[in-house]
Length: 155
Length: 292
Image 1 (cartoon, each protein chain N blue to C red):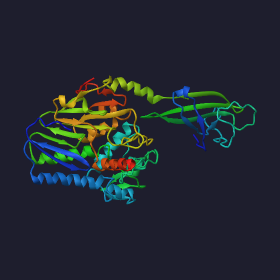
Image 2 (image 1 turned 180 degrees about the horizontal axis):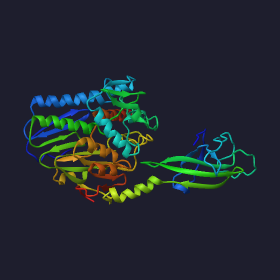
Image 3 (image 1 turned 90 degrees about the vertical axis):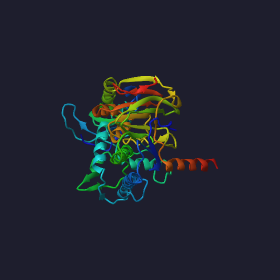
Image 4 (image 1 turned 45 degrees about the vertical axis):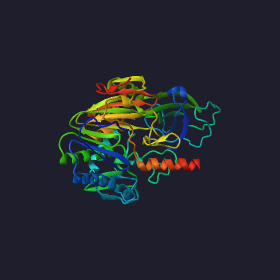
């Protein structure tokens, strides 16, 4: 695939649940062949996916495929979008998406033993334990600096 | 914070690398042993701390290009390679630049300059080769994901050369025990007077990580996704048990991301984690006693 200056293409939230900004890689290829001119007109005025059928020819007819990624809190999901343009009109859109999400669900069962409801816990001083493990009480320096900032902010 | 020790013996407490250490032994540690422990910690800090301007990683960040490889370079980079692969790049030793940009810098400025991703191709950028630790182009290494775990192992090994019997090395959140089993409460990240469960440790290490303490700015904390520079939002706390603290620490970090449970499975590590909405998840066959 030949990357050219890309135009952002908005993918509606309905598609993957998250509106991701895709970069449309300008790989203009004839629908029947694997290679194409390798150019797209990045200066085109038409909005991606517009239905402007005036025939100004801002985009070359053809099928464009782009890989895009969007971010969920803990992962970056990749999707592939294929758009078919004819006379500057998107005639077809297909999306292959969310593979990681599907995998995530798989390993919920395989690598996670269980999931509870929200946990209140028990008072530590009622337990028979010799140690407590939480976040490290790290960084004297960190805490001191935070305290300083707080006191400055309060002054 | 920690309740009284329930085992007979000697406890030596001290502050180092900005955290509280406790070394519990059946018989008192000699002054010589204590000096050795302190020297091990000082050396590690002088090599790996990005908070010390004279450290090796600070020299590399300033553009030294290479330094004599510290003893742990190969070990740490190998574990980072596993972590990076397991989490699809969410864990990355060049996260230092991102942490600094977001305000967690050596001056503790806490001025956030926004999210940025860490170098994706870090394994080409940082290498341990021919006795050198090479970093080109310059970047800031941060071994926060596993460094303290490794140090706990080094301290435990040193203590074991001096005394036999039961030993616990506890570096506030990362601890390793040898001998008689130790019961450890898993501190609730939202109420530090409570525990969400108890894990019994026998000849093993337990590392915990949580986003509740090192917090600054607008929802910023020290666990950032290297791919985006954004703080993790799905998990609030993680606990991992492995045969050594290096691997327990690595799992505790990986558990903030997709791929963590899989790596724990591959390494045979037990674990528990809490989502930010207060739910617990745990390893299949987990031995933790959980208060769900």
